[in-house]
Length: 377
Image 1 (cartoon, one colour):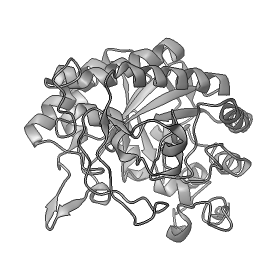
Image 2: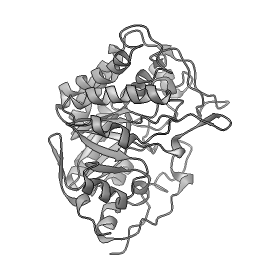
Image 3: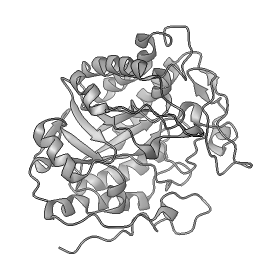
């Protein structure tokens, strides 16, 4: 493709990106006992041509996630592992943000990491999500009923400490994972937040947790803080009626836009991320998230995510509808994606779904991870 707009540099916060093709955060389950590895370093170095790499979700505290080999950032060993990766990406000419992740009610008390943590599964309210698949727990249980966190400042302070640790590791910035039914999203959504204190009830109160988490992390990273949002819901049993969805996210985005952020990532509706808990009844709230919420983003860079092709991205950036795009699956399967787009090469690698995720019982973790071929130039 003859692309120009995607290859114009852009400033996000205090960071200058060399192009507007960013790599979306996607969990790949290659950490060993929550510690990042040299294999992960190889994976990210391969993709350092991205304008910005947002690494896979990093757990801010030990949690019994469905992703048993997800990395964390609460220990010195983890910080050292991330610094090894960050330094390598910087040496390869890349920029890299940490995605800070608390899974909230989608953890399980019988998962190994949750048992080690010795803490309850925290959420805004004691309301379980439907679904869930914990392959490492006998019987493959679904989601449990969580414990309502008494004082949400406990978790907000954990976000701040995670940001401090990310800064030690050298990350250029941080993205809060406010999407896909994890804890910031759980506070926002009235179906998962039934609190009657200052953290629940009204839209303003349900927005408080996410906004305070942003402010806490900004004390560490200044302008180099971002947030990812998925207003269309669906995944992890999220979604309010459409009018309430629009009112809630319009308010939250308006307030976040005032906080001098690096960017806001908006996820579009995706059937892949939608769920049917009842036959024929989709959980997601289908609407055009870009069209609906773009007017409320006035001071912040906007990145669009979910099934955005480079061709569409060129049109969106050229027209000013978005400032950059985030690509997920195609970045996983094409380590040279940016170079392919620049030279008009097809994105034709076939996803190796059998090895997309892994666990401690898997064999060669490089398969389906760092072995995708590059194009011939």
